Figure 1: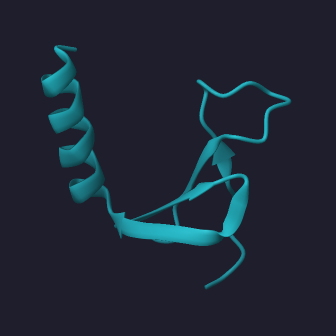
Figure 2 (figure 1 turned 45 degrees about the vertical axis):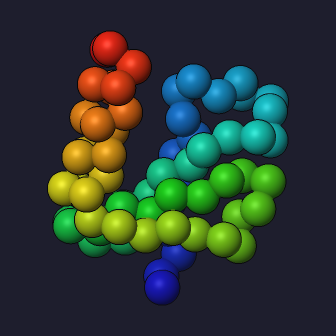
Length: 62
């Protein structure tokens, strides 16, 4: 995998280390990691992540 540009969640505190970070290794792909354990990376495609977010929002009533 090439070097990725990781972006910290806007809900994370700027100085905090417990953050979700996201990167886009390809047009279809998404990579997620926890800033405290940056060597562990979850990869999926955008459609799957979008479906997960929609499902969680629906469950929470958002």
